Image 1 (cartoon, rainbow, N blue to C red):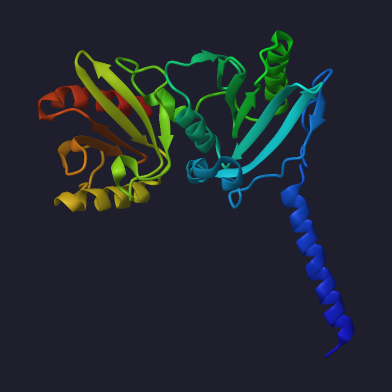
Image 2: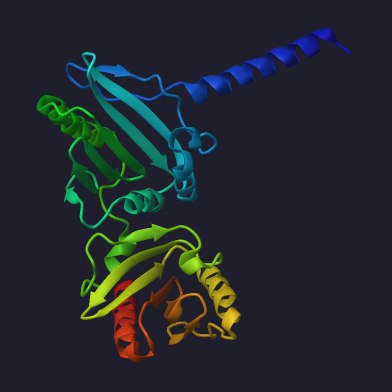
Length: 291
C-alpha cells in the first residue's frame, strides 16, 4: 500500500470533516446593521438534523414543513438590552407560509410587513417568500422596542422573495370565511397519511361551521391516485371524469363533500347530509375560480 496515498486520503477526509463542522457551526450570513447595536453571531446554523437542540419538540413541525436552515443573531446595546433575530428558511413559499400560519392566531395584531406580520410587546413575526422571521426582546425600554421594529423593516427589505400570499388562497370564497384561519398542511390531512399538501380555511355561515381543503399542487395522475387511496377505504371510486361532486361518510371525520378537476381537489368537512346545496355551491364557486 502506498503510504503517501493513505496520508493524502486521511488529510482529505479530515479537511472535509473540518469544512462540514465549520459550515454547521458558523454564521455564513450577512445580517443587517442596526445603528448603535453590536451584532453577536455566536449561534450555530441550525439544520433539520439539529434544530431540536434549539426548539426541542417544536422541530418536528418545522421539519414537516420543509425547514432548511435557521440563522440567529443578537443585537446588543449595553449589558441589559438585547434584540434577537431568527431567520427560518423553508424549501418553498407554501411551506414557509405553512409554518407561519401554524403559529399565528386570528386574534393577533396584524400589520403589513412582507407578506404579513403580527406584533405583541417585544415581539414581531413576519413572513416573506421562503422566510419566516422572528424578532424578540425582553426589554421594556421604549427605544429598544423601537429598534426592534426598525430591525424588522430592515430585515424584510434585505430578504428576497414574494410579498404575496400563495395564489391558491385566492380561490377560497369570501362569504363566511374566518379571517386569518388559512393554513397549509403538508401531510396527514384529516388524519389520512395519503392526503397531503392542502390549503385549509374555516367558515361560519349562521350556525354552521365547516372547513374547506384545497389540494392544488398535485398532477392529475397524483390526484387520481390520492383519491383512489382515500375513496377505496369506503368502497367508492373517483370516477372516470373530473368535475363530479359527491359526498360520503368518512369514518374519522363524519360527512365529507368532495369534488375534483384535473389539477385541483376540494374537500369540505363539518357539514352534514342536510347541507348538500351549501357545500355544492361553495365547490362550484371554487371550480369557477380555478378555471
